[in-house]
Amino acid sequence: MARRIAVLLALAWSGCVMAAAPLVLDDRRDPGLCAANGACWRAVTDTVMGGVSGGRLRPDQVEGRPCLRLTGEVSLENDGGFVQASLDLDRHGPLDASGHAGVELEVYGNGETYNLHLRTADTRIVWQSYRASFAAPPAWQTLRLPFAAFQPHRIERPLDLTTLRRLGLVAIGREMRVDLCLARLSLYP
Image (tube, rainbow, N blue to C red; front, side):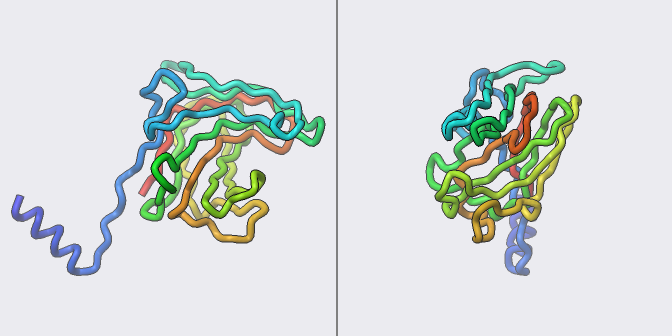
């Protein structure tokens, strides 16, 4: 034990920075819609803005794995075009993700391309976000989306990792059938 403390102190004094541990946001242990971070997932569609897309969010089992499943249809009618599962990250103030490199997802899909959207204290208008796309084939896979891959959408400010407020798994921008399953969501070091 004394040796371990001496090594840690030596690293601290030498200016070395120890990597953050993974931060699990959801591992689907809750049989409902609540995540490991204590917040609950919500389904949001373009109907909030007059669109006609439809979506459903529910707990499910896919190939023996508990997951959160987002299904529906994206329609471009009435200037619509999205179906989303969103999770608040700021239950006790903004989440500081600055010690992490990105977001890790375990997903199963229908071969479509989806987005992961991040919102921060800077994204004050509903259409502002930081976005990264990913393919979701019909097999379980683990994906890593580095924060550097997220592009600002309708916002000029760079992504501030110290003020994360919400994330969303989103089917957006084109007519499509939505079927996306999430078994685990975390921030990786």
